[in-house]
Length: 189
Ligand code: 5GP
Image 1 (cartoon, protein in one colour):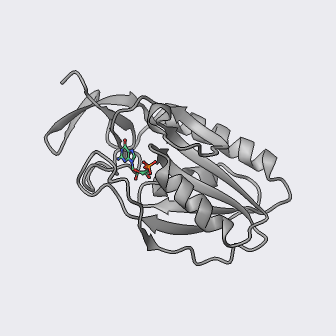
Image 2: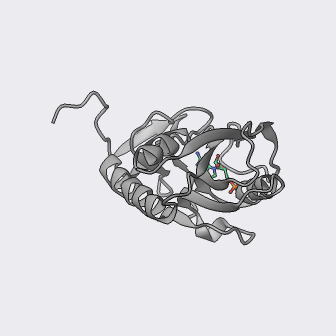
Image 3: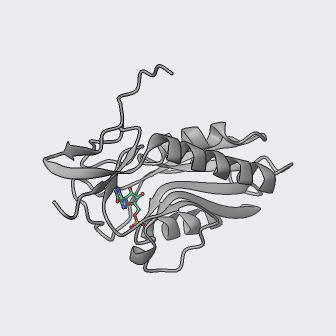
């Protein structure tokens, strides 16, 4: 099959650091489809609103929404990012608020990755303040070892080691988001 996407490389350099292939595009797509099917089943008759967390989750959200075959809506919020660092600052700022009225709605928060869990805990609190009918969470990636606080994760794509990843929407200093595959920092390098 022909494709206009760049071919999967085993290793890449991003900002001078070496990353190795961790999850290829087919593996990601297969899992995203399974998550979409589970969400479609669980929310049958409910018309959920998906809240995507910018910037990182935009690619996962776009694929996940196309894998959901019941009526659903979408909105976004934006939180402060790592900047050009690979380590969380530990402080979460809201850069763009959710526009939709969430009162009485079934809200599904969509994250690319849960690391310390601070961002997800912050978003859940914000959403709860709006009086939704229900709140659930989905994350493509979960760094279980790094998660400090208990955050309820209802749907998880992949549990991954506590190493920095890029690709499929995730960046390193704004680069790497356009990679169709996921890469992990090569700790052996
Ligand atoms: P947390 O608040 O759970 O520590 O971090 C959540 C946010 O940090 C994610 O939405 C993402 O923006 C960023 N983040 C955490 N781990 C990684 C990683 O391995 N790679 C990239 N690119 N971003 C990460």
